Image (cartoon, rainbow, N blue to C red):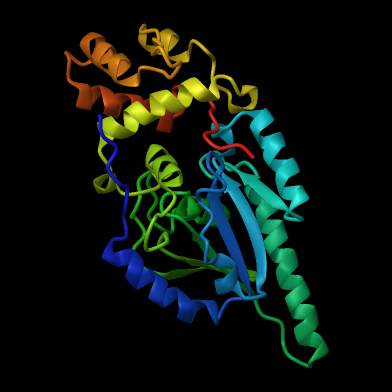
Length: 290
């Protein structure tokens, strides 16, 4: 089964990026949100140039969807890069209070500098930035403790910038997800597709499902990833065979699983497999490790 290039850069993202350049001049703090399952693949290559010395908080959202050993591995890796990370689960609210306190501390430091120049204090202005569907809007709703922005587990829900006030200390700017205009790293693009962090029009679900089965087979040899060796057999009753070269015969697995679960419809089976991962029915699995 072929694996065509995965590319997705819809018009609303290009428009949002242009608006971001204007908004960045007005903010004091950038809260960057990444997907905890793929922290590197959801890091924008232009971010450091955009923020240009502004204060920066890095959030890894969906911590519930990766194993504890994976979290520990990323903690150590980011510490080695002298980067503090904030683990959150916007759906349950885990880690949100700590993130809010960190943002407020940034505001206090800002106002201390303003006071030294004889200026009045004001709320810190924070931009919530990240790839599509990493949980930015859900995180804002948790911070405000009510639904003030639309949120859903699919890419492209937020299409315009919107300010939200959080008490007297913090103003948040919710922005549409941003992506590089071209995804040159196709392994990273595959991970974006698997995590639903890119529009479904960008990829073929069967090709992505086949690649996912192959990836699971390789990750089963990495304990921190959280993939049991018999995961697919336990979940779907279909063992993963091996080709003579040792690579998993993923296409054969998809055909057999489809015959058992979706009346032979491989497209439906591919969708089922991807949905099971995205909804954590396969467990807490990290697709990317340092």
